[in-house]
Length: 248
Figure 1 (cartoon, rainbow, N blue to C red):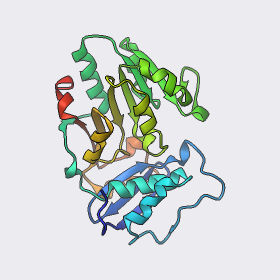
Figure 2 (tube, rainbow, N blue to C red; figure 1 turned 180 degrees about the horizontal axis):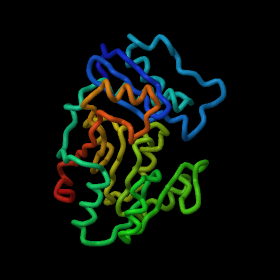
Figure 3 (cartoon, one colour; figure 1 turned 45 degrees about the horizontal axis):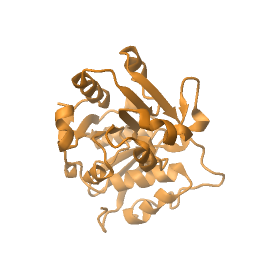
Figure 4 (spheres, rainbow, N blue to C red; figure 1 turned 90 degrees about the vertical axis):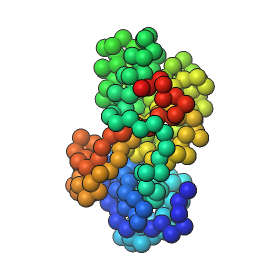
């Protein structure tokens, strides 16, 4: 998937976002140490010497115990192919808009599992949908379900919406395995690599970001910008062509 000659041309490891540019593209990943503290002594190898490194070498950090290093690896991999490589039915807008469209077309209240506490959770609850919100066990608060309960409870859901940060925590495949085969499966967030290989994992919708202005995105990442301050990126959705009729 990653070209042999892909190398890092620029990198920023910010508080909220990790930004990488290669000769093939630009990508960001959520800087994950904010959720789970890195192990004592964890470092990013080659820090200060990453420019010019082969992406294939940096990609090995995806197996690191450090979530910060995994974020870097994911951003480097995602930047190694152009967004134009993505396939599927492209629908402009936010992931939550796509979810609302699906629910409206189904003409019924849905049982929705949110893997991560999305900002639109309250709106879904007000509309009357049955809502399960899963969070990492150490971060769980009142009203949320510990992520360790996913294998037992997730099969109840008609729709599974997972944060793209599950890619960094290595939990994506376990969530997909726990979901019912007929459940709608969505992954949402800028951390998602825009590559058609994701369809092979069983996703029905991929809700990510296209970076229109790499310099603006870089400035935001370098200056500690959060997702609301990420100027220069545009939300876009890709739907599995076999499921397009459910979302359009």
